[in-house]
Amino acid sequence: MREISLEKVFCTVPWYEIHINADGTYHTCAAQPNTISGTPDAEIFNIDNMPIEEYFNDRKMCNVRIAKLDGVPEPLCELCYGEEDSNNYSKRQRELLKSVIFAGKNFQRSYEQSPFAKHAAYTKENQGKTNITPISYHVSLGNECNLACKMCDLTSSSKIAANLKSQGLYHGPVKINWTKNEKAWASFLSTLKNTKNLKALHVIGGEPFIMPRFVELVNWFIDNNITDMYFGTTTNGTVFNKKLLDTLSKFKHLDLGISIETPSELNDKIRVGNFKVDTILENIKKIKEYRSDNFFITLRTVPSLLSVAEYDKMIDYSIEIDLPIMSNMLSNPEYLRIGNLAPDIKKTLYNKFTDWIAKFDEKYGIKSDIMFNDRDPTQILHTSRKEMMSIINSLRTEDGL
Image (cartoon, rainbow, N blue to C red):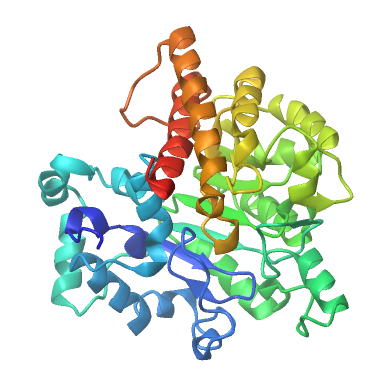
């Protein structure tokens, strides 16, 4: 049984962030699998029917906050728990740092002294409600996508939805997109414009670079002179749009992730579409030219049993091209988890990657366990070692090595 303690469970996300899925349903956290769409709550907790301001203090969010303050583990938070077990940095830990709350032995003292403490006290006294407004948004603008990745699903890929529909395995809409509702879209933009001290917006898809609403949203921020903030998005690297990248460069802090599993042809078998990995690698080189003090670029991977055998190639490529790598260990679908590999394969990979670490340490001498900004290109060696150790720890944890 997992150890239960406030330090292991507490997270500030329910106080500061809003998450919206492709169909407009609200969601607690981007690090959690979506369990709202298709449920009776889908129409209730949806931007089509409930304004953001109302949702933020509705019963659902109040219950989530109370559970966090009581140290109650949430099954949907297994991704963060698993990353921490693998000695990787989780979204939970990163969000705590934003409130000057430290994981580990200094948790309780930093929690009590942090600016967040007064908000926690208010929530305890008011049945889970909060007196602050969200300052960070994680939003899907729809499922429109030009790839059908093996680890994805129809809520994030219109291509997968179309494939399943053609096979008679799905009967819903191919394109799932709440932004088609003009009233909901206008309400969303109004809320953003009226949000004091807006800190961050991260846009996902589908593939944002082929979505008209994404371009519209970026231009809306520029036209309204709202650029003193963090703007993040993730692309699959199939599209190079110079005009869009030039516009994105105007934000105070731009974080662009490029999804790729491996620099070899295996990537084409995992991220399936009419694009070859060579096109993506070429686009990565061109996008890298935009990197600056305010424009951060990272390679994003989702290690699974399909790709983990070439993870050393992925990190070697990351170092070669001088772009940091950030991985989110695959948790869904469960059958693609690394833990489902045969024991002999896991042992082979474990030995292969520990040998890689030994050679890496001999060459670079990087052995730091401190937290750092893994988007910072000057920390790429620290990032590379951390990510490989996360894979090794995952193999060891899963197989009891």
